Length: 143
Image 1 (cartoon, one colour):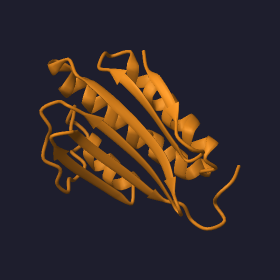
Image 2: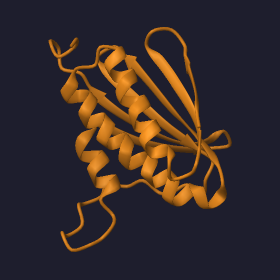
Image 3: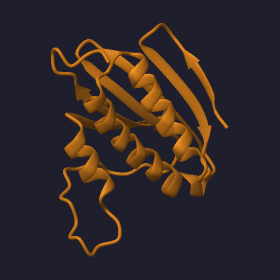
Image 4: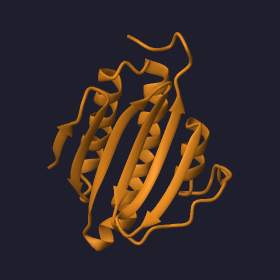
């Protein structure tokens, strides 16, 4: 279960424990928050798929360390920004190609990099922060 808090109209955060049942909750939270901050459907859908991949990775990899994680969603001018923060072991983010169609895993990072304008990974004492940024094209805002 998670606890969500809104700080102003353009920033929301949810705190979750890493169990396999939280992926849907985190993705729904991100999608709902993006819609509430007037991010257009196409941008919201791209970011939501990227969040699905990011949270799935946290649950698969950081869950081994029984950590909690946070999903933060905000609008920053003409960009929508989602940060997934955890305290697991972390990883090295580098440009990645989509694996061949017969490979069972390895699509998460390339998919995030394709769907977002920017994917950044910052590791520090306060946690590992995967930041997904998507530019909102002028005239795309609103429902």
